[in-house]
Length: 175
Image 1 (cartoon, rainbow, N blue to C red):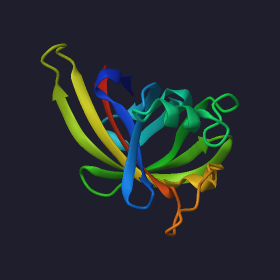
Image 2 (image 1 turned 180 degrees about the vertical axis):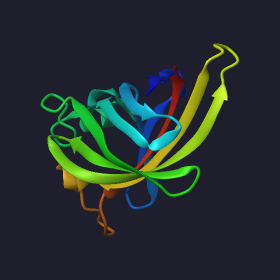
Image 3 (image 1 turned 180 degrees about the horizontal axis):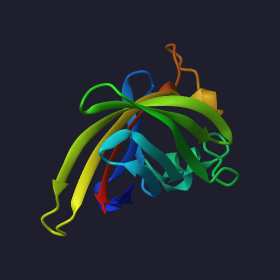
């Protein structure tokens, strides 16, 4: 069994969503934790639990961030965390995997699958230990989780897109 220690300084959880049908609004969650259990030499054995502090959302716009924290979106007062708990890891190639599990947002739990790229392992020159990296990507429909607030545009379409692209990178120290 490998012990994984998340290196938060070299990890991120970001997202992007269409804005006014013409551009992408981007943001990140600055407070999160990822627990991994299993054998690094057999990635299909890994069990993952990610916990995100929904109030830590940061889109570089305070008014928008406050709106996203409100009952119109994440309702952080009643649903302070977003969680993902893996159920299976499937190998697609030496570096590509699919992780399927239960994603919970605003008290709604659904099964989602994310693509994971395993970036390998390296000896960390600063610590002498082994570090590993993973990139995660996927798309969810925000309305499936009760994030349905929107405004119709005069020219057609809506202010905020339904599809949210998730882009995360994680670095772990192994022991």
